[in-house]
Picture 1: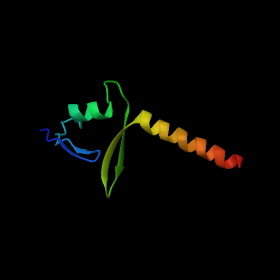
Picture 2: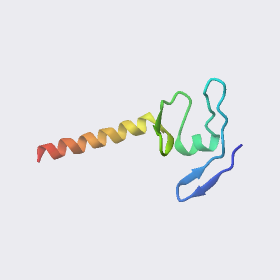
Picture 3: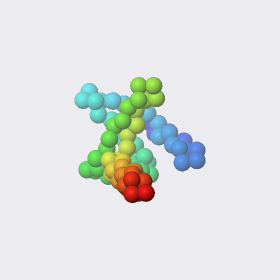
Picture 4: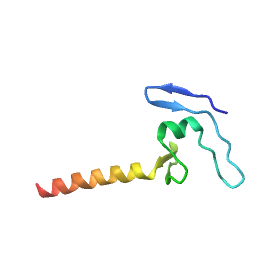
Length: 77
């Protein structure tokens, strides 16, 4: 069931059902907006108080590289 709701870059794509093997289907609009393609590696992150987040591994990798670059610059000063 897909119920798109948008608010300043935030979206609610509806609900998905967890299958017997723990799998879910990411709605098509979500895949299109976030550029998720077959074969992409996704990370599932969890916070017991706030819930789950699914992010593309490449996005986290880019963030980590930027952080490391800033650490290197700070150490040089």
